[in-house]
Image (tube, rainbow, N blue to C red; front, side, top):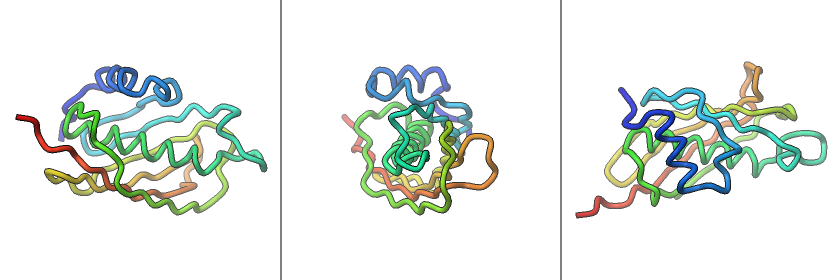
Length: 140
């Protein structure tokens, strides 16, 4: 499946609707089936123990899945998270992180999928998130 937006269109859309976070994330792959997003980890993302914080990992999972959904439905800013659960599996390195998102089911009102989170350059995932997004009704 081909995405309905290019990486540049998606990047521009995020900068417009979420300027407060757009600089923290970079789309590195988007094909309509999967999306890979890099979170540029800064000091503010770290917690004691020199590891990426849980809230920062949640942000990466949420942004990556938002992009995955937008890649399928187009720019719909009011699509919102209705559920997210994360299993933290191992300690992430204090480095950039990659979120690999995929849409498992896309309906008219819900998008359901998951995101695997990795410390950049590592093969083993550090966390797994399941997400559901609510898609607003089409405007007439």
